[in-house]
Amino acid sequence: NAGVMQNPRHLVRRRGQEARLRCSPMKGHSHVYWYRQLPEEGLKFMVYLQKENIIDESGMPKERFSAEFPKEGPSILRIQQVVRGDSAAYFCASSGLPSNYNEQFFGPGTRLTVL
Amino acid sequence: DQQVKQNSPSLSVQEGRISILNCDYTNSMFDYFLWYKKYPAEGPTFLISISSIKDKNEDGRFTVFLNKSAKHLSLHIVPSQPGDSAVYFCAASASPYNTDKLIFGTGTRLQVFP
Image 1 (cartoon, each protein chain N blue to C red):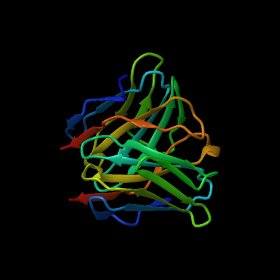
Image 2: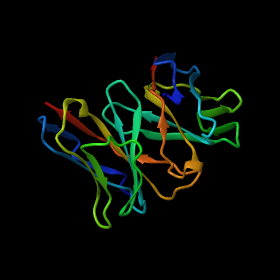
Image 3: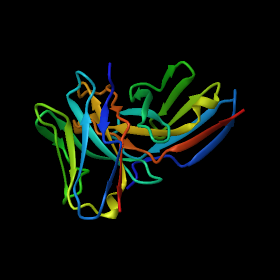
Image 4: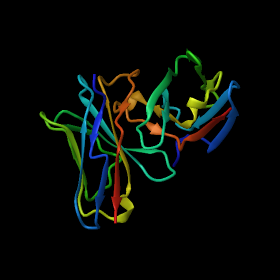
């Protein structure tokens, strides 16, 4: 029973390049959440997706960031033209159903370093 | 605007004693609260949760208390063990928003020493 999988675990990009982070939710889960953790800070919500739909993107920066969760395949968080301030740990979480009492299960994270 | 606050960045406790981690929130719409534990270079691991209709939830060595009038919750770990040493995050959600996004505190680093 595999948990939430994220790859790559570590990603190094130079300023101006693109970063693609992948997340495969737990088996049976159709709700995916992306969070970002800056050094010495808590996790900050970015976006909530269900299959083929963005439900809440209130935490996404207005430019350069996008997310998708296609019908087939993993969820992708895409950062275009990365800047040093994008360096952070990006965590994906999944849940089974939206309810008052679900828990979100987190992946190991992708640590993005922008040189 | 920090809606979930963990005012103690660190806590040091002797093995076998009780660890008490505190969390305050400001948004009265929050109705579900969770505690996560995080080791370095790993994702957060769910520990225990509580709904706003309860004031206590217990699971083994872990108990969460909720004081709605004070907008305060706490996590008690007893007895504390060295393996409990990690960063603990308090999180909250507000189901009326229908998004289930979690709002996290900044974490408390717990160190349990022998």
